[in-house]
Structures are given as C-alpha cells and as structure tokens.
Image (cartoon, rainbow, N blue to C red; front, side, top):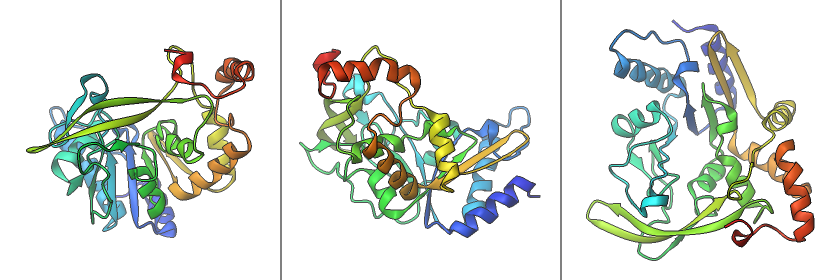
Length: 278
C-alpha cells in the first residue's frame, strides 16, 4: 500500500515525465520498508522494487563511485564495489545492464546504453566532469536527479557545473596516471581530477543553494515521518546555477570558505594552482 508521500512523489514525477533518472540513496530515510532481523538483502531489494515501480520503464542510473584508483593507480571496472551506498551496490550487481569505465566517477544503468564512453583506448586524458563525461550525458538527456533519502548536498553534479564554467578560482586540477582494467583489456589513462585546496576548509552554502532552487520551482522536496525525498531536472539546475556562478564565481561557497578564499584570491590576483598548496 502506498503512503501519502509515495503518492505525492508519483504525481510530481508523472507531471515532469522524465526519460531517465539518476538516483542517489540513503535507505534509512527512503520510503517506509519493513526491516526484519537478518533480512538486509530483502530490505535493499524491497527499496529497489519500490523505485522500479515508481519510475516504470524509464532508464535508471545509479552512481557506483569508487575512489581507490587515486591512491592505487589501477581499477578493475567489472569487480570494483560501489562506495556510495548499499542500494547502488545492489543495483550494480543485480539490476544494471551496463556500467561506465570512468576510474572514479562511474555509473551503472538499466535501459538503453547510448553514452559515448571516452575510456576506449590507451592514452586518453579523462575529465570526469567535462564535455565527454557521463555528467554531460545526464545534462543532454535532461535526466531527473532524484535524492532518495540522501541529502541534496551530496549532489556531485555541482562539480560538473563548475567545470562547465571552464574553471572556478578556488579549485585546481591534478593529473593521476593509471590503468583501467576491463576484462582482458588494460587501458592507460591520464585522469584530470578537480580538487579542493589541500588542507583547507572548502564547502558550499547548501542552505542558500537549496532555497534558491526551491524558490525558482526547480527543486522539489517532500518529507513525511522518516522519509525524505528531493528531486530536480539536471538541466534546469545546471542552467540556473551556471548563471549564478557566471555572475559571481564564489556564489556556491559558504561563509567559512569565503573568509579565507576571497582575500587569498585578491592577494594572488589569479585563480589557485596546485603549487599554491602542494
């Protein structure tokens, strides 16, 4: 039996009629699902079933991010575990039809695979937030970003929006060279990682960002008892926040970050570089 929040979310999703959805999850604040002692796998499967019913036949994507490539310089795309939640790992192993080969910001999906994967041959420089990234694919598809119990502040799409600007002055790039293993194939890659200044506080003003998106009718929030849901169009969110940071490159940053970033940038008269911190 559907709860009120499930009905409300279903209605709103129907009005938006997305062709695909990216799900970030935290099952402890998802839809109401009974957990019985020793029934962890069924608990996860029941959440997956609820989401499958909610979205019907549209393409479903989930992040399967794994950060071990950065220190280890090697990743096996067929066997690496998702480090971003039990539902995403369950989806990767039991539901997904395909996966992407990105060394860190990988995704798995159910539905047609039309993404032009950039990790194809030895030697490419991979930008996980650039024009050939899966994030750009989400933008082109106008995918629905759906936070199922998880907090909106975990939206990695913000890094794609920053990269879309070309560069933001408070981040810099580092290159990690390594090997992507896919079955019998080993692909050498140079990974262009968008990093925050080493040893410094850097965070976003999420309360402001969320309030602005809600006020513009871009972000929809639904809460009931222990269930927390929010969602928006990737394209609408990107276009709105891109306009904001185009006018003010420091728009996204919280007050604690601004207190040191703004005067440091003024003193340098340029954007940060790796040599400023490492």
